[in-house]
Length: 260
Length: 190
Image (cartoon, rainbow over all chains, first blue to last red):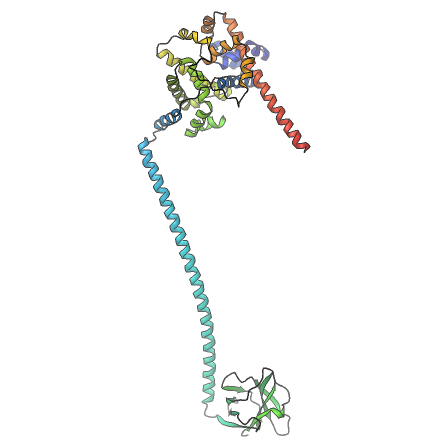
């Protein structure tokens, strides 16, 4: 038979509703192999009958579905309801455990965060203190070095003679010809503005004054003074901030002669 | 449907659940036509669905629709049940006069297809043959005897009934395709 003869024979319909004889069934299945397009006919017949069956639907009673599913669970070796309740309780317990663990993880995370923040803060404080300590150590070393220099047996402590204008000033020159390291010891200085500085000068016979150390007066009690060979007199004046190349004589605080 | 078959073949309970939701009413409609009793019908439905569950690997999509296969299982299970209880198929012929008889609570899914149009389009003499053979599992010979018509007439009427159903389904599909094309066309216009 060709395709059209198969379609017209009614065998496809009988095949779908399961009413074919063995011979008819073999005929249809052979035709399906020869004419694959007949599968679409089978599909359409099946779909049409499915629609018709739906027209005649009867709703099952409530609970039948669960009954069937229960039987399948039983056949699969699913534990009975009581066991499943236990499982549900276990599942519930597991969920609680998960929730508690989750909270514990959150709490631990929070604590770690706080600890990390504290550690960072402490590290910052430590670094700051370390800097301060280093700075203090440096200052201490400097002062210690200065103290050693001040204790040098070759030092000569020479009072700086104040001018009448700055008579209240009290200064000393610590002079050391061997080490060539001098200091000015400050006991009392006149007040100056922010725009002014103190400046030391080296005076040599027949020469113009040589500018030396400039300071603000708040550096400490001992101000290092640059050593200048052949200086006969050291002088200190008040100059514009940062110092000048030539001294302002009307602001002369005092002078001191040194041994040659 | 292929999802359901795949799930069933993978022995996943969800597949059986989906199978039930989609097909149980239609299958129970077939079963109840044969066993004539709601409680028995539901027992048979349960047996049939378990057979589907246990034998789904033997379903061959090349040989027909999935529903055709499960409907066959439901019909044969119901017939076996009737035979087991000593019923004679011929004893139930009187119910042919009322295919929507009171003991069968028919629920027509009107959202799936226009049921009234389909039923009106199906000639009563075709519908009786279709119901006997497809819904009640009569053989062609039993149907011929029950209706007192020649076997050839049963075959012809069965084919005509199914052809009518196919035409109706095709009409629905054509209408759906037409609406779809119209919507696409309107969207393109906008």
